Amino acid sequence: MKRKKITIIGSGFSALSAACYLAKSGHEVLVFEKNKTIGGRARQLKKDGFTFDMGPSWYWMPDVFERFFADFGKKTSDYYELIKLSPAYRVYFGVNEFIAIADNLDEIVSTFETIEKGSGKILREFMSEAQSNYDIAIKDLVYRPGVSPLELVTVETTKKIGQFFSNISRDVRRKFKDERLIQILEFPVLFLGAKPSDTPSFYSFMNYADFGLGTWHPKTGMFDVVRAMESLARELGVQFFVNSNIEKIIVENKTAKAIVINGERIESDLVLSGADYHHTETLLDAEHRMYSEQYWESRVFAPSSLLFYVGFNKKIENISHHALFFDTDFNQHAKDIYDEPKWPAEPLFYANFPSLTDKTAAPEGMESGFFLVPLAPGINDSEELRELYFDKIIDRFEKLTQQSIKENIIFKESFCKNDFVEQYNSYKGNAYGMANTLLQTAFLRPKLKSKKVRNLYFTGQLTVPGPGVPPALISGKLVSDLIDKQFLKQ
Ligand SMILES: Cc1cc2nc3c(=O)[nH]c(=O)nc-3n(C[C@H](O)[C@H](O)[C@H](O)COP(=O)(O)OP(=O)(O)OC[C@H]3O[C@@H](n4cnc5c(N)ncnc54)[C@H](O)[C@@H]3O)c2cc1C
Image 1 (spheres, rainbow, N blue to C red):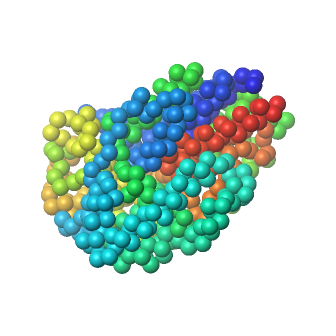
Image 2 (cartoon, rainbow, N blue to C red):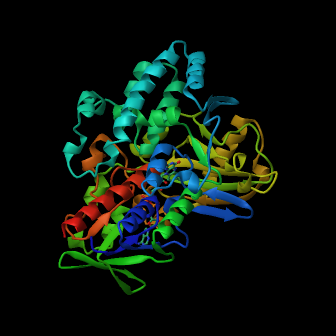
Image 3 (cartoon, protein in one colour):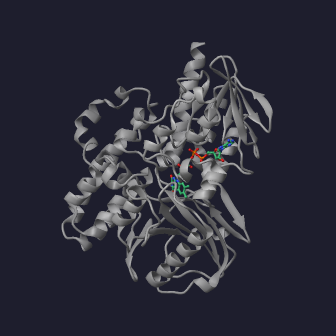
């Protein structure tokens, strides 16, 4: 195959993954990132001795990361150390009332049994089905490029067809009665960006990822993975350019020919965008776009988020590395995100404290904390609203964990919808792409390959397979395979 010059827009996980595969195939690969550091939504914030992962914090599906590095004859341990979190996480339902999820299924089964008699056995059956779905979905289906509906038709999926037409919420409610257990089992599919009642039952593979495979933490945070992929990419010859905002994709004779940065034209044999799909299309003249504004408007997007990165001048008591605060009405908050978008009156929120696991994340005797409130994409964002919600969640946190922390804040930065738009060119400020609903799965998602412009490809969380870090790694592989296939034909 002849060596081609491939320019990649963005440096999120999907772009990094594609860069590695394309360089391995022998191409000249150049990655251009608009921000001053690489990693996209997984960038790192370091200030005043505190370190925060700015986006993803749950390292799930370790097998997907291993598979990625194995494609290059490497292991994750060649680049970073993984710690299995124990407990995996806590879920708070009231004042000092929480359920801790252990790092193994046997203990989780016992926990369920103590809360709802008979639920342990049901959980084992549920997990066995979830594991079987994982084997079908994550080991096989998600590695198909979303080109044809037939990709989803296999002997195994045909046997499970009913699971595509029921939903997680209904399934879980049929099997379990205790509202707390139901919420814990509905939680993993929130990573896919839609309500559990809009997520097909087949996606219970996320429950296997949770209870079956466990929650891991790269020793000094998720950014370890970005560093690892950057090292691998450089070893393979990829070149990186930061502070490089792509202003335009030049198309001539219906073929992508170049990208433009600060008015400078950079010739390309092929352009691959790992930036948000909607934004990438705005870099093209209207006649070259595949999807209209109405199309994007009609899609279900994953939530946006209000985030706080907070440094405390003391150790925080009564917490775990990951903690979910589900003490308010889950369904009402979901309605405020998806059905009638507005700031939620009583938000659920999530917090993590990386310095509990990684001593380098905060100065000695101190703690770094990350707080997240999911919000409707496109919502109105202002400093006043951010502060109002910060007070709301910190007051709740203090009450639920029985301690005062407000006076101990010595560092705080927020990040919300306007930052997602401004810093990542994110459509409506979505935090993690386009949701995986039945009608937005596989071949029904925006395509990896442009149908209107030759030599223009897309990767990332708005295309296949969908939101999340493991899917982003897979997306980079899928698009590189398609590109290789095209060049082999030429
Ligand atoms: C707050 C938050 C929490 C999350 N939690 C988890 C989690 O715990 N676990 C998990 O697995 N996933 C999680 N996710 C999702 C996961 O982080 C994403 O799905 C994944 O990182 C997306 O990668 P990507 O390559 O598709 O896009 P991005 O990371 O968004 O990369 C796109 C890149 O393109 C750049 N770009 C945009 N426009 C241009 C331009 N014109 N020129 C040059 N560059 C441009 C952007 O700056 C960005 O760097 C979370 C996401 C967020 C935001």
